[in-house]
Amino acid sequence: MAAARKKQAANAAVEDSGSAPEGKRLSEIAYSAILEGLFARKVPAGAFVSQNDLVQLLGIPVQPLRDALRVLEAEGVLTIHPRSGIQFLKPDFEFARSTYQFRSIIERAAARTYAETGDAAEIAALLADHQALIAAIEKDGLTPALTQTLEGLEQRFHGAMIACLRNPLIETTARRLKNYVTLIRLERLITQPLALRTLNEHIEVLRACTDRDGDRAEAALTVHFQAALQRILGMF
Image (cartoon, rainbow, N blue to C red; front, side, top):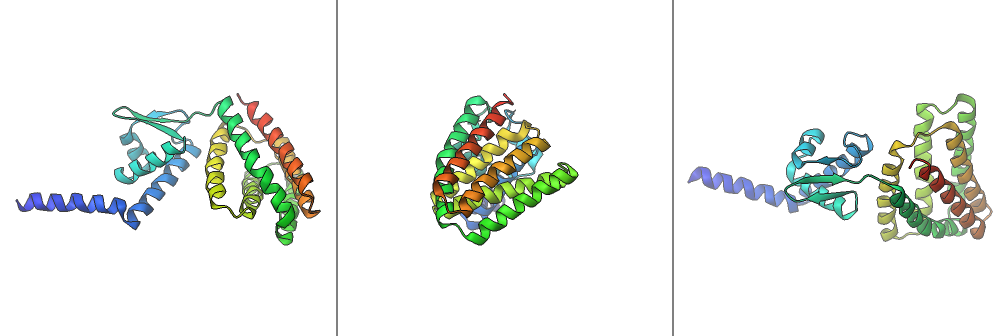
């Protein structure tokens, strides 16, 4: 009887932890770990795996893993097949097109708002950092360190425009789209010409923002996304 009561108490504690703040924190850690596993190719895009496979591979406890999987399924990153396994998304032509179309709808408005109301010092800093990175790539080539700098600068560029809208719903959607773009780009080789082209497209947007020209900023952002989509579609 005593042993049974202890087991019931332990089970209750586990269930309570799933709804407590700590349980929420663990599920968020599990969410990040699954995405990192995908981005690091520990879990290949399109893979069909069991829950136990993910527990072993990523070192995530079962309950937080289940919570995170449900969130990721709602976000379209995977499909849970009951009593069968988990099917991860494998991006294709249509998924890439839809993702960039959605990004374009959101960020065209963001570019216009950033041009009209964005912080001038932030815009100037982004422009200077883009120009400095171009100079470094042209001098040393696209080294691994400069590739990391490029990725960080791209996040700052798009993040600054999204933040300028001051809309938490858009920010949440933008984070989800960022995950989609990362998945789409996993098989893409970033070369020096592609990096320089991307940076110069960003610069056109930033120069329009410096001039407080919303029409030009929106048009330059549209050109950037059209070119980026064409580069992505060349992979399929």
